[in-house]
Image (cartoon, rainbow, N blue to C red; front, side, top):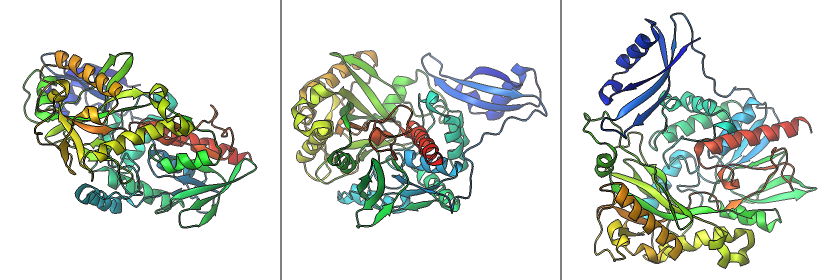
Length: 515
């Protein structure tokens, strides 16, 4: 059995992998041992930042267990299961179906990941939104171009290590298996997604692009076929619905078909941007040699007037991106490259909103939260037109003062001075202001004129939940339809969505095996 040890290292020591492994061998009293890192985290709370590394130390000749991803099987002639959407929920549902002997047929409304990149360039430079190919839709889903943060607290819901190992198998760095807050990077994710697609096809599955589902034909409480935008109708045995948190057309379709859906609380606010050097100086209380400390991040939570205000999707060295999925709306999100070496740090800074906020949209029934969300996105667009985002210096926002000018910003479509109070509800804006005032006192330097608030951050999670029974053996109304992932309201990130995709695939497989 290996010895499991935890040791601390200075940034300089951490940069020398051989030194770290020797220290573990010495601590275990085993020379020439094999050291397998299990977790590395950074504690920057003291005067000296320290890396905390946990590792297993194996005696000479003792072989560490080999982590396994998904079993590859030949499913060319197997029973097909249709998967709608190729985000993390859809892709990992497909991998799980192959492992269980079923043929996944993935229907993606958008384009392959490389073609999708061209649409993003047009979105940024020409401000033209392709409703099927953007930061939310297309191969890989929203996670592909929102940088692949893999941290999750969903370990009780499935085998996270298996998901991470599958990503490593397809090109991710092995560090994601032991970093406390693993991250792949937007520059590396497209290649990994392509390799997963090629693997699915090699096993006998299908991945079809430009296949937007517009209808389900339901008889005797089962989906009998799906109808595509071009009119093609595909017979189905089972459907895993993994369309993501922004598929408003699917939410409306389900409502029109009489299926049960529910309005769901989500979070709304702004994207907050600081110079990365400033965040580094706040979080790190010492000077370490260059490149020995990662670009600093933060995680912020405050309670203001009975509601949570919190940072979301923090991107060190990152970019603010336009995440609109239709013309006439401004939506901001963030991403980082794998090195996180940009000049700015950005993060969502959002407030939980619920039925008390959606009340004025009651005429939309279970779509009321979705309509509330769309209202603020459209209002942000109307302040300037195009995809120009309303922005305000943090200090001006706190002082209720219009910004006469704005500092440099990473948001490529451009920003324009607008008071953030004009594009958020009074309740949301006042809570953000209250939280920032508290944080300005807690974190010296955080409150500054060089920080920007850019609106609006609204796609934090789905505004709709699609009910399903606890065991996932069948939908309450449609026996072979499996609502899945973020779009169904049962996940909140890449790993949790992938875990839910696996669960839905297992449930679909079990139902088909037993007729």
